[in-house]
Amino acid sequence: MRCLRLKKQKEIASVHRIGKRVYAPTLTVVYVPSDRLKMAVCVGKKYGKSVRRNRIKRLLRAAFSRYTPDLLPCSVLLIPHVGAEYSFSAFYRDIGKILEREKLIEHSA
Image 1 (cartoon, rainbow, N blue to C red):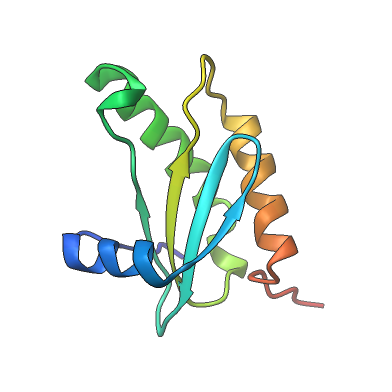
Image 2: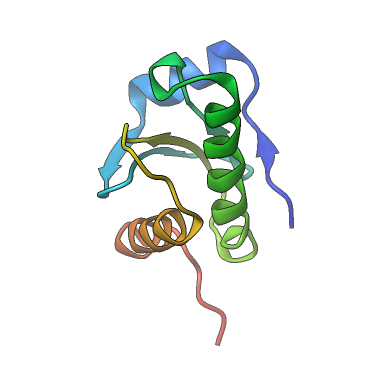
């Protein structure tokens, strides 16, 4: 299952303003319950040039997409922390920890 993207600045600002923030070593997740699963990645110019920013976005989307089949419907904003290295495994691990801790994953028996 693919999730919808939050594309409009108004929607992203709304999630950023009223959403619940959860922190991990590599990223911050802001989420709000909604009717469908929606996601956006916020990577500004402070992360480096466009090649590096696009790589960070690809890694975050790939790590998040592994969890989409089991996620409850909500609007999610992924904001990475500025660092020297970014890896898929670190993002995947931290996203999983956050989703488990916040009980956003529904477990099928």
